[in-house]
Image 1 (cartoon, rainbow, N blue to C red):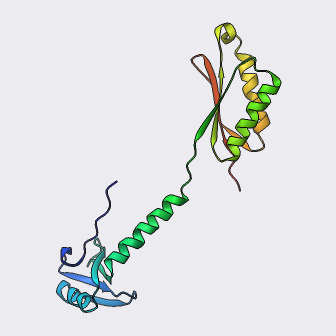
Image 2: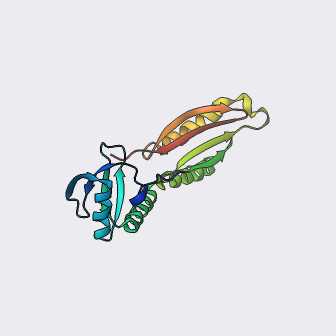
Length: 172
């Protein structure tokens, strides 16, 4: 990811700039040389904050401190992002009642953690001729989880397996 470059001091190419002081006070439009002299007198940098404006807006500030604050903002934004994973649970058409409830408990835990869950039902041999058993099992899973989850993808066949994806309900 390319970082946007900020022009500072001698790298600024405009002839005239609108200068903003360190305390956000407007110092007005002046030539680049005057602005650089003003920044140097305060022992700070002249940083171009809005190069597309006419004339470009430059702020007198400590560039090192500015870079540090920008990196902290970026870190904070990354920290607040949530990563949703898709967890998978596999079933068979002839999965017994207790085993099915155990698998549903696993899916419930995944959903409560904020992840999505893919419930896959694998058919073996001649089981593929009885798709209704598979769809019945997936409907049962959906019914058991309807209080905390919503079916994102309805049951769908893919090769010798049928799957659906459930996601957490959005909180209001």
